[in-house]
Length: 261
Image (cartoon, rainbow, N blue to C red):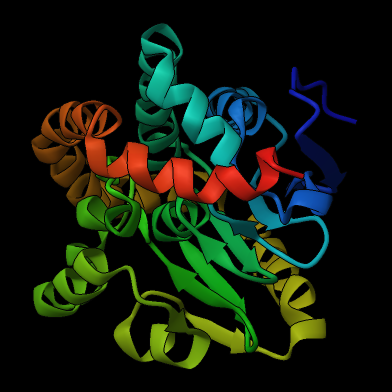
């Protein structure tokens, strides 16, 4: 087994030359908390340094891929400037880590991919999606800017008009629609998504290593230029949005019923 330093919210399994990465908060639908966010930031440099790794499959444990941000975590970020700065650094590291990772990343989207989950799909190299799953980037709906999300990556994957529609509304994108738009490669039966993603990863892992890694690098130079051009402004905008009255009102509304239980 490869030796990775991981937070408890992530699991890595060896499958020959393929690393299967599972987001591991199944009872919370793999919603993003600090541990998951930090773990993802620290993961991809470790994969890059794993000399035996030839491909990665990224998926979620349980019924979801990653169903958005944990509202308790978002509340902490809105109140704690130090934690927010740390989290924004981690956000940058997730984006740059996935873009620069030398091995291809295949996403097996086994359920809803919302917020950061949607960003992880957009930053992956090849995407297999369960037919019942959906994508959504609802940051704007609650008053946030998605620094590592659709606004950065979607214009390279689909038309600018479609990227604007879904980034500005936060609407759900069903699997078939996501495939039509070019946001995912393949839509699979729910019980076959991981199997098909693994088959793709193993096929790539069996190809000449240097050619695969250099080809991914050439392709991702386009994405890297977009990231460099937009990420600083996007992170600053996300930081500002965490202190907006609109976000505060939405968080209070979402958290009030829980606090009253």
